[in-house]
Structure formats: C-alpha cells, structure tokens
Length: 179
Image (cartoon, rainbow, N blue to C red):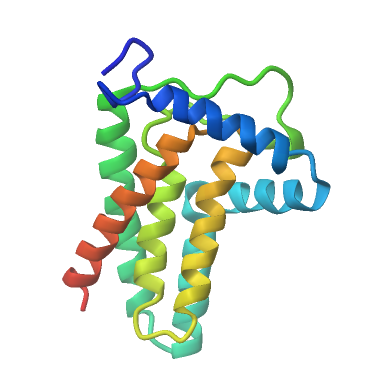
C-alpha cells in the first residue's frame, strides 16, 4: 500500500485516477441534466435504499417476499465485508474537493477504497436480475450508480473499478447461495 493508502503497489493507479478525473471534468461534469442524474443516483443509493426499494417492488409484483429478503441479506453481507472489513484495511483518502458539494450530497466518513456504492450496486443487480426480464436495466442502473461516485468526486476511478469487481464476485456468491 502506498503512502496515500492506495492499494496498488507497482501500478500507477494514482496516474490513471488523475487522468480519468481530468477527462471526466472536461467531458461530463457541469452539464446540468447529467449532474442531476448522477447526484440523484448517488444519493438514492446511499445505504442501499434504492436497491431495497427495487427489491420490495419486485417482491410486491411477484407476491413473494423471499427475493426481497434474500436481496437484503446479500446487501447486509456486502456491507459488512466491504464497509466493515475491506475499507478498514485500505484506509484510502477520498478525492480532494474544495467547496460545497452540489445538491446537498452527504460526505461519507469511510475509506474510499473500494467503492461501497459500486459493490452494493453489483450485488443488487445480480440478485434483482434473477428470473427477471429486467436484468439489463438492473445492471445499467448499477453502472450509473457506480459511475456516479466518480462524477460526484467521492471516489477515484480505481475505487469504483474495485467496487464493481468485488460486487460482481459477492453477487455471484449470493446467487449461488440463494438459487
């Protein structure tokens, strides 16, 4: 682990993160409609509220609460693993940002690596997509939530990439546990 807590020795993750952030600043930030979408997605996914709501809606539509219960259990396990264990190990600082965050977005207190929003999004998409014709929409929404964390400057690109990877693995495990 490097001095700033970044996880990759020998790989210049900081340089990649800086390049992605510079491109994001030039190409995507400051566009009112996109800003609103990204800030809203990021906020809606705080504490996995978005995913629990979608799980409840799916359970109501199917008249079967089991899938929502399994989703909640998988998200709880993901939070314990990512937010309770992995983030504590790495302790990476979040991207520097001077000024007030637009749209009253909350500033997390946990470590930046990996992105918990990204990992939870992948776990949720994996669980929600089971036996669903909406699977592509769940994964697309998970992608928006994950990328929103770069957009709102709460995570480095490498945090999000790691969160997607961890979430994909945890989602696959959860699907095997709850077939």
